[in-house]
Length: 331
Image (cartoon, rainbow, N blue to C red):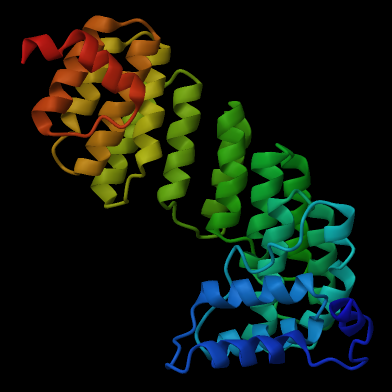
């Protein structure tokens, strides 16, 4: 067949994937094109599928010059399979030849984040070692995805501690975000003694608690059954002007319900209601769903009536079904 004969006589030195791609784009569209991060992510992943590491290098350099920084999808072609990991060494060598400074450092950081996302923490630490040895600008943010993976996915606080010691050894001071990962893990497991120790370390280092720090502390207090302490922390956040996350309110709601304080949970969302509609939809929605699950139908009815009164969207089918079956006849 002619087509097969054409394929059999391939050019031994074909143009790079990058050149072919740009030719194709230019042929299809002569209008000025404004590049985006998604556009570059797609090109990089396509180049990787073709094994064109020269194109990957050029694209990673050019995207920074175009102001299209790396994203969590830049290295999607790295997967937790033998085939996906097999290109890691060659990719690391490619990153080593990127433009000095931000292009190279940010690419390594993005690759480390990708490896952590697919639970390849050891491979990410190997890349960190490369960055340290070659002086590629390792800083605290480089370690954030590693600490996140160790404390959230693997629940390995001891290993996270070891990583923080490595940071200190190379004179990279753990920042508040690094501490927050470990603090959240301790608070989630109810290890308040370890959490208190971390707070002392943060204070000694001159760090101020931020939104995530308080969120972790509220979580820890609620999981330990100390909801009153959590309320004190909320008031302190308000007094100090620290933003309160939606999850922080959720911790208190769940803490109250866990103790059987159903009326108090309803009162809590009422007190904080009316300030932020999205927060109201989150708080009332979480509380309504949990009350239905716990078969506290009287309190659930109060919550859903209040949602209707305030014009809040009932996002879950559970809330919608309960409302249709129990409340529509009243309106």
